[in-house]
Length: 352
Length: 266
Image 1 (cartoon, chains in turn red, orange):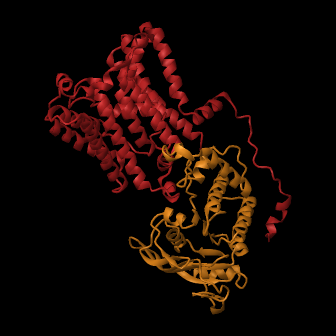
Image 2: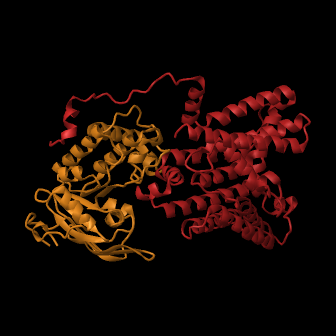
Image 3: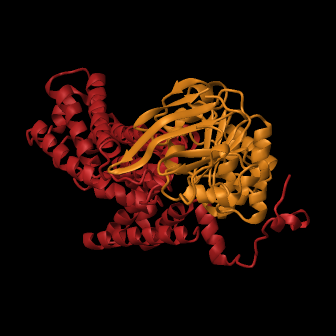
């Protein structure tokens, strides 16, 4: 091999590769590394610590009944937060998930209760409508190249208007659902009552759905592509990923999850109302952020978001059991969000 | 098109490529030939359209007009995936790595291996072990960098190590052509030497290489032919054994007309 003049001494060059100083292994940097390698660690610890603290403040909190109530309260938020996580991982955001959810509940309810359509078809139609609305968001983001925030801000209004029109601004009452399509309420029923706790089918569905999407994100090519697109879309495209199609599929899958969440929500609430779940958009973003998923995309996890939803549930339930007013509960959750985002920034700095 | 040096058909050929970005003409009838078993250098001033040419033949941006032929057959690359499936691998200037993903994930991005049996077929589960072993083997085989942990995120690597991963990825999968856009730009003297040796290794395996670089000593050392790009088109191709570095630079910048005897294909 020909070598240039200045390269002559390369043969006798030191072949050792960079040795890293170990004296920066302070407690803080160890913590930082552990958190970066296992991002779900923080929400898991926060959840355990907050359960213990609320257990001390309000001893009633540690009863199986109250703890299972927290799980019931976050079931719908948790499921929609899984959808929101997928979208935020691609560096997007979805403000229309609540409208998709409620519109899907009305498709299921109207078809089965008012028109007597067989339940499986009504549920499939509701989930299909949810998927379609999600895919529409995805099309605008991927093909028309509009920012996700603006797209879903627009479709939030569009879907909300459709929801009000389709529902005729009227609720579908619990008694009507029970009389015509009782299985729509199945997810609200108790699957087991161990030690005074009430575990609903909806709670089990949340855990199973989270496990399924954890597997998909970690162990399938599609899941790795979701992370790659959020990380660096240009690099993902050059690596041979069809970024447009993947993005559309992410939004469509998020819509499908909202459609499934609609079924669970009917069981949880017991009736179908056009003004329910109006706060769920921000609640899911809160859960996702507290769960350690970065709003800049590419980092985060499904279990984190479910833990994030549980943390919010523990805080609101715990504080109200401790006799704290509503507005201080909001105050506490708001601070949790700020701390979570600050932590994300600190972790990012460590990598640059 | 045949020439004196290579009495064979080109493996990769482009004719009359045009590309406009708004009012900017990035390629104005650019031609390109790559012959089997050669290292082709591509040089040109900044803004001459080298990168646009490379993005056209690697599928990143389709040209507006013109024909690209691989092995004598017309190909239409609309995405980098099309070019990769045809056996053309590219090391881009920006490396095209996903920082938060691991080294193994990055090497297999877009061509993941699934597990055998029901887990892979039905549940589409990836074979992480197989991919990690392959990635580690390739990286240590190339000797570009020592990796403690193949599951380390790419963002924890230094600039040179990242370049090593990108080069290793292209070399490991390129079956017909390997294109390298400034592969030594971020590398130290020792690592640059490894990449230049690597280029010779790849060539000895029978895979032709396109090397884009501003580093004239590197170009003149490893290339069999040099394609000089100027004002959106090929000015000429020259033989580095005949022409001097300063003449090549003079032609590339427009200070000198290409001498007829230096032209080996036009």
